Length: 326
Figure 1 (tube, rainbow, N blue to C red):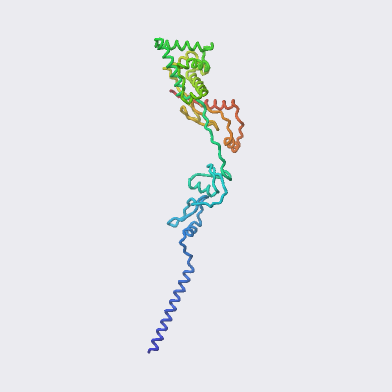
Figure 2 (cartoon, rainbow, N blue to C red):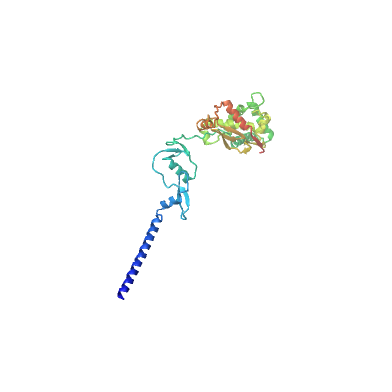
């Protein structure tokens, strides 16, 4: 009986051992057939981003939900192959250029290889112009001076003011019964002390500029009451110009179906144009450099304009002016 019991126990131990071995073999095969599990985010990103393409300066990473997403590169390699971007900045290599474009969310393309060349500072040259405020200030000073002369004679009637202006008109008229800009300037110069013709501290420091501005404002005054547009004033036009109650319509500047107020600015190639007293006044610089290069790129080879051609261009611009009631 004891021998039988011992035989049964041995068989059970053999059965258990065999079962254990079978389970271990199964677990080993299962482990070997499973892909390696890595806790590295890089390995995870490579798996998720296998089919995701990001543009230059970007890289693909995995979100917490395991979805691919593109972001700007954290860093580029330190290889030095300097390039110049279209924004005027130099970059160590192409990667840095594209990375900066990604971070700043701007379009930056390769301008040329190597460091960017320093460009000389551009001078913003403006034309000398007589604005409406300058013209009106000069007109008010002349009117005030005439009124003071009339009052000094103990007469305040309009006839007395007209008689005084007629006297000055005859004094500076060269005999053609009209005052041009030079004769009007002589009229102002003769009475410069009484008129106290100073415009600003800056202009006082440059008498040439002051005289240029005064000449332009005289032209603006003549245009104010020049009814027949001959750039000369008859006696009637001269009196109207210096009569306080005379308020003609004000002209404004027009360009491409738009109306611009006094002081507005625009550009014709490299030249600045300013709206002054209803006219576009432009500088007359010779355009070169980037403007010339742009013309060549567009295949429009344009010869340098002569002074006559430039004046015609400005005249065409002013031909677009539109009159507006004051």
